[in-house]
Image 1 (cartoon, rainbow, N blue to C red):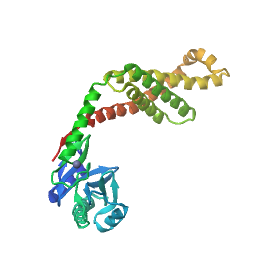
Image 2 (cartoon, rainbow, N blue to C red):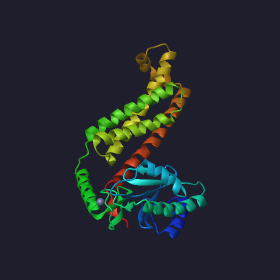
Image 3 (cartoon, protein in one colour):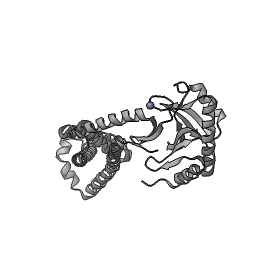
Image 4 (tube, rainbow, N blue to C red):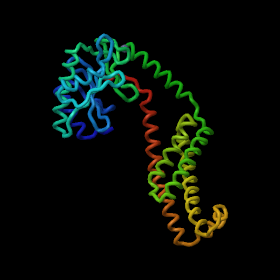
Length: 311
Ligand SMILES: [Zn+2]
């Protein structure tokens, strides 16, 4: 995995002065600074710092978030997210972000200490000096050793279960068929409304893959092949339906009578070319939807059962 260049420069400069270090796998800064476990990552184009700190076992309330935002330099927003306290780093330019990040790391940890919040396990909430940073399913978690052992065990059980789940090919075919029918309907409707087919092709790609995975329980190479075949057929069916609606209307026939002579209609070479171009477009857009859907499914699967210590 290659990290974004700006991200890397920012992280390197911040790491140098704060004691945090770069974790390439999760593309985050992580470590202990000023006695608190922290991680900083990119979320929706903003840098967000997370801490796991509690006072008498409790997370802070909304009032704390408001006060903290005012008191801590370099921070735009503070909120409680799940079991973490999240600090959004202010600034847009690279240098401003670096300065704000460094200020926020110092400011937030000082503020937490002054308010009586202790570094705590984000799972059980207990303060402990045996908290470590772990990668859990592709994200950073700060856990005590007991909680990590429990989480790791349940992950191994879930992984074992997943490995022993058989792909249900018939279910997958049914799911992919449903998805591709939805895609075909969208293609026809969108085309009838006169819009470009890009989005509807993407819907076809995503819905078919999702359908296979949902009812097939697993997406294997075989599943991808079956889905691709269904997409090829259904995109073609959608194109014929779409064009035949136009054709039969023009010929003042009903849809099915039109379908009967649609082949003859296509013999007109100009129409044939137009039809082929529009079909090809539809296939390209469908691939644009399907390929990322397959990729994200495989990526999710790859990190789903990750559980290991980083620091
Ligand atoms: Zn714990």
